[in-house]
Image (cartoon, rainbow, N blue to C red; front, side, top):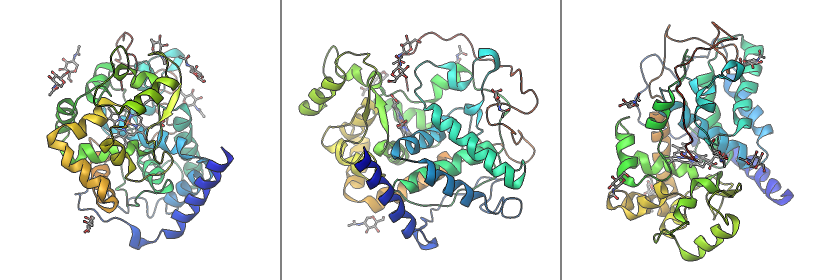
Length: 349
Ligand code: HEM
Ligand SMILES: *[C@@H]1O[C@H](CO)[C@@H](O)[C@H](O)[C@H]1NC(C)=O
Ligand SMILES: *[C@@H]1O[C@H](CO)[C@@H](O)[C@H](O)[C@H]1NC(C)=O
Ligand SMILES: *[C@@H]1O[C@H](CO)[C@@H](O)[C@H](O)[C@H]1NC(C)=O
Ligand SMILES: *[C@@H]1O[C@H](CO)[C@@H](O)[C@H](O)[C@H]1NC(C)=O
Ligand SMILES: *[C@@H]1O[C@H](CO)[C@@H](O)[C@H](O)[C@H]1NC(C)=O
Ligand SMILES: *[C@@H]1O[C@H](CO)[C@@H](O)[C@H](O)[C@H]1NC(C)=O
């Protein structure tokens, strides 16, 4: 562990050394109306350095970075990038965070965003939204684990309402999905096959619980999975519901790189939604192109992150700037919610 952590810190130091405006990937993605690259340049000029410095000190390995990066996907895909994911219900009331059992988002990642908000608001006042903090923190999670740097369009405002549990289930992609389902769910958001392959590349860092993939092992083993890899998974997850986690990228779990695509070509990824992209002829060529060219993957990943990060944003006078990422301003105590009663959805996303 000490070794891993040392390596990680060395990597962080290295990637920061390399940071300069020249290393920014300049992607050709239109900036959504109401957002801008200079949104806080007067009202909170140190915003991005406050966030970067803080995350640099709290990311001890790639685990928390992965948790933070995943928050942006779950926020943006459901009801837009409005930080509704962060809302906490009072008195055990449901929220997106707790609506679906086994979402397995890291509690520590939610706390990291609230900690950033607290630091930023102390310096600048209540001008920066939680939604923007999620977007900046996700970018920094990528950079601090070795991935590409890019400018984040800012000016999102925070939503006032939870998404329904139904919307959450409908909009997120289950790990059991095949490529047809994956592409269909992304097409609704104007994301194409290249976006699907590029965004799934986020699985180059972080970990998964057994329950997210044991349907590929029990009762029958998925024939598209490498046999030795499957046996190793079974060792760690001897039953379908073993409560353990595994690295998602076996080659370089703590590095944001293109090895996930090499894993795919070797049939050594955890989810059907991952592996089927190498089986399906519509995405196979894209997988291969990223596996052989990390620069290409980084460029495409940035484009897709910029698209995802601007889905359904609230701007102008919509929404609000929350004083607490877990609660809307208007009623800190009671947040009404339309989230319905949900059955058990074992490890659905
Ligand atoms: C679109 C299809 C996707 C599916 C089916 C999917 C599914 C999953 C699942 C099941 C897990 C493991 C959860 C667990 O068991 O602990 C996971 C983890 C993760 N996902 Fe995805 N995901 C998708 C897209 C994305 C996107 C777009 C991003 C970000 C850009 C992302 C980033 C991550 C990260 C970083 C982790 C590791 C989290 C951690 O270590 O805490 N995923 N994903
Ligand atoms: C759930 O959401 C989908 C898509 O938004 C919609 O078609 C469906 O009617 C909703 N179901 C319920 C029970 O609200
Ligand atoms: C993909 O999954 C959907 C939903 O489960 C299913 O209807 C469809 O037949 C599958 N497609 C392929 C090509 O396996
Ligand atoms: C799984 O294990 C973790 C720590 O090992 C524990 O905190 C968590 O409560 C467990 N979850 C379940 C459903 O048993
Ligand atoms: C890799 O992709 C980059 C970015 O698109 C491109 O400029 C470069 O020529 C590619 N390298 C190879 C060896 O194809
Ligand atoms: C933020 O809101 C949550 C949810 O209402 C609450 O539990 C928490 O105490 C609040 N934090 C602060 C600092 O007021
Ligand atoms: C998943 O959720 C179900 C129902 O809430 C629960 O019984 C089960 O222990 C959970 N599993 C994990 C791994 O958290």
